[in-house]
Amino acid sequence: MADSIYTSLDTAEVKSIHYRITALSAVGVFLDGFDISIIGVALTIITALPSFSFASTPLGKGLMAASTTIGMLVGAIVFGYITDRRGRKFMYLWDMIIFVVFTAAIALAYDYWSLLIFRIILGLAIGADYSISTTIISEFSPKQSRGKLLAVNVSAWWVGSAIAFIFGYLLLPLGVNSWRWMFAIGIIPAVAVLILRRSVPESPRWLANAGRAEEAESILKEITGADSHVENTTAGKVAFSTLFEKRFIRSTLFVGLFWFAYDVAFYGIGLFTPTILAIFGLSHSNAILGSAVFASVAVIGSFLCIATVDSWGRKAVTILGFAGMSVSLLVLSIVAIEVPKEAFTSAGLALLIASMYILFQLTQTWGPGGTDFIFPQELFPTSIRATGQGWGTSVSRIGAILGLVGFPQIVAYAGLGYGLLFFFAFAVVGLLATIFLGTETKGRTLEEITGE
Image (cartoon, rainbow, N blue to C red; front, top):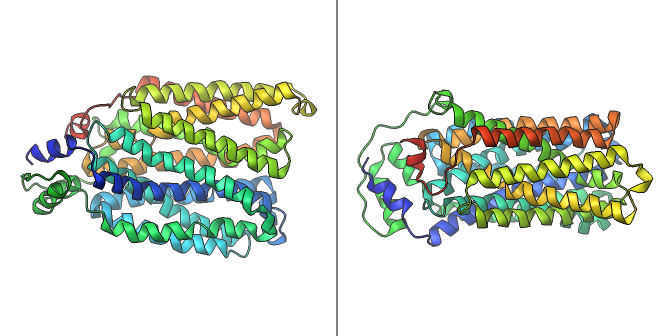
């Protein structure tokens, strides 16, 4: 394959097509963030309903919170592999179809088990979108703006999460069925995204790797405005085992470990924020409102990631993020263990708790909450790029499930402080993994990084 395909893509100016692809991918991620976060609000309602009574138990609450995550564990790796074999656009559309259908099914769920099953299936689509949306952005993006555009994509998750808590708070007056409207409202933007995604072209990198040179040349001209020559090539090997070859094993271990550790801490804190704030003394409605405020701080952190990831580097901001997470979780755990519950409402202690929550949310999205969508895209070659993203997503879902199922159990039997200390330990693991296994990728082409 002639170098011109890589040069023209990597040095192109950011144009409307780059923004369009990023926006349509980001809305999908926005919907993922909204749906995953809204269950935290819905759980505060359905636990009081007779047909959902199992959700009031620690195990039932943990399983429901982890339900889409369970589906993502399978969907990310399976559909990531299919994306590498069949092309980016194929799954780019199908995952959104599944999202629309099963979001509607969730809004109509009639008991605990139907809701659980529908959310697990929805998780298949969410996992697929994690692999596809990031891959299609990275393969179209110029090298100097790639980190920023990928960070914009993942920042949409935090916007969706914040809006989920805001809508959850606003819909509470609708009563016992308000949780159904919380889910149903996501159908409208999902249908719009599905229609608009049809206009997104196939990745020229994938086409070139698959030996479809003429199609790659045509799309390249649309993007760059210049003629580029692409040689016919033998399709690159698409195999999950490639991730564990000697040349990629460090990247595979790093992506899996840092993302796993991050999701143990983030998902437990993120989805159970209303519960945690209630333990710290807030009323039901104020706990949800507080969750919206803290989720909004996470959006600010994601914007800081967008602003710094291409200049400071991926590794630097990830280390910063894990360090902030570690400090905040350690302080919160000490407060919860050592301070009597009745003292939580004192002004000084409330300010300390709020400050540590803000530090956690700000740094986690500035760091690993932004780079988890960047590192896998840059460390793996075209033939297994979506598979590598799927690998990281699937391993991280195991961490998320551990956090979501384990945290309620720890809180029930040992108290909130030890649950937070559990998250602190994994934040430290993520910090060490980044320091010793992480590779800086800023300012380099995808082919320079992977040796294609």
